[in-house]
Image (tube, helix red, strand yellow):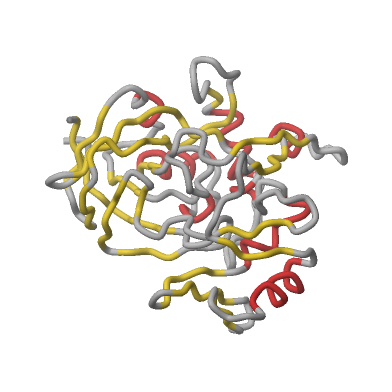
Length: 272
């Protein structure tokens, strides 16, 4: 056995803070209701993402939670808006300081801007941007960055905390499934190409290590900004996310759903 399911998170709106869950269904699209909505920049048509901090870091001050058939978005002062309210776009645009619209329909060839992490770590005043396509390894109709499932281990958190005390808050890395694993290190580095079984029915095929962007360095609600959350990976776990890519700061792993099923806290995680 690899370990057990320690924590589960879904993020009903892309780049907003999400919510912990104790159990959920997992389909080919990922955890039910995960990345169900996103904000679109009304000027550029791109998906708003905190990967471009200069424009979108304020998204990480908002929390998104399911509220019946709607999603409830809560601002730091406790003000709430719902995805079904007619004036939600206006409120969100004022909050982030840029025109946005909340949508559950990804545009064709949806893209996001991603600040280059090494530029950020160098403290460059001219941080370069790369343009990425949403959900390249996921079924159509999703707002996930790459694949439907993002995995993380407690061993990785333990290693990050040892190298950069205080930087290892799991919310910085935005996983779906945190697996309680023994020891310390980055075991996910060895997982691509292998298949996990979780609980009775769910199986996940791991396809890549997760390259990290600017997001771990930013404030996440009450969790303060800390560049060490990225620098420690740049210094101690710079590996190739995929064999075809250059080495990057990585932590965690991306997976696709081979067989859907239900996942619960405490479920055993084994090799399939």
